[in-house]
Length: 135
Image: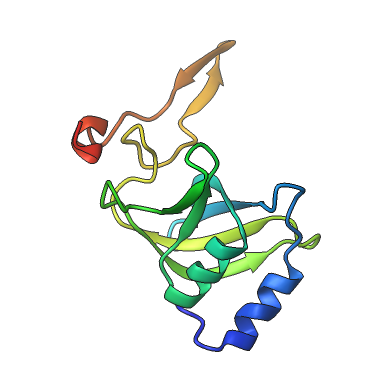
């Protein structure tokens, strides 16, 4: 769902409170199921591109560069709706997820939970990460 009007995109950006590093946390949620898929960071450039194109873009802190979700794995996220929390410091991206969201090959990055006092995986990989990333 690209936002065609530059003024509308500018209003969303102006309402967003970025941290000292110029980043804001962004939670990706499957728009159809409500499943929380992942959390990543956006800077102003990533947020602008996400709004303008409808393809979800994050900021990779490890690479210090924009990260267009799925650019190497093919597991793209397409924007359905973008929401800002009451403080303006967290984004919720309702998305259509193509394939898996997690680099481990799982549908969601939130696959670990406490069970009987131990942290254990509660979801198995759906894809081999080596296949996802051509390793």
